[in-house]
Length: 180
Length: 216
Image 1 (cartoon, one colour):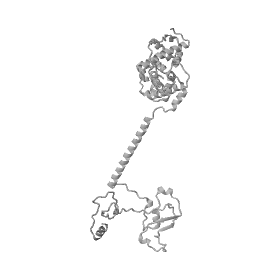
Image 2 (cartoon, one colour):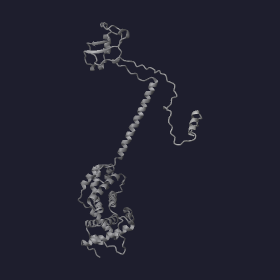
Image 3 (cartoon, chains in turn orange, red):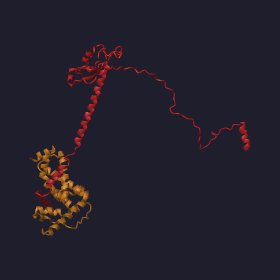
Image 4 (cartoon, helix red, strand yellow):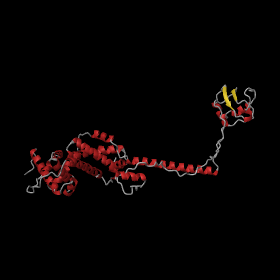
């Protein structure tokens, strides 16, 4: 069954199509949720809420080629994860930005395994990790991140800088040598 | 971090997310299956709308039929109720056997009829024939027949009674001017402040003069 057919069936509330959609994308979306939430049961809860939203709002989704469905579902999962995080975490609790420090050079990460990168990112504190995920992985700019997390743009920049610094430190501790 | 590095990170994370992972996938699906799939708001609305439609149609048709029936009554073309054969008045002058035959039910009711030995049959008799000495029982116009050797309906046939609508004649009394509530004269008067108006002028009678003189 193609993605377009699957969407059409889901729009007609076909339970089998919904199950097929879940089977196809649940793993990836679970990983995505876990990257933000860092707790298995909470990530499952977030994923469940996200899928409920997907099924209820799929009628309003217009298919725009391969990958558009996954992109749309990823946005829903990210939004659900951020809603969950906002309830648990205060993103405004951050230090002032120290501009005297140089940005760490993370080019050496090219040699890293994807799974290792995923695990290192997961080790970051919630605030850093969230901004890092939104900025580096999802590709949002600081204005968008500030709006999503209800923080200032400076806070977002600060969090990202600290996230990169901490990531470099973690990699050094684990024995990854990436230059200076 | 340079944009190129960010791209590498993005790719690696996405690559990691494509890999299979062990988690409670089936359990979560079952949990989702337990929950209602979609909101039942539309269903509720549809049920409410159909209810309303049925109610409105019912009320309309009831009023329509009632109106038609009333129109028929007004025109005097209301369908007359056919008299039941069992309720037919027995001809007073007819012989008893004949009148019993008249009282027998119609063919369609014959299946329900049970043979009975002692059946009381009430027959309407004219007044001049009913005033007969009770001892002259041999007269064929006896009002009650105790036993009839024939198939009869167990139910005693009723004598049809014509309903006569009699006008109610009465006298409407002229409305009297009655008080709405019983009023009783006030005997005692309580006054907090006494005004000049309340003070009755002293009557200068002989008695009062004596009293005043005694006081002075």
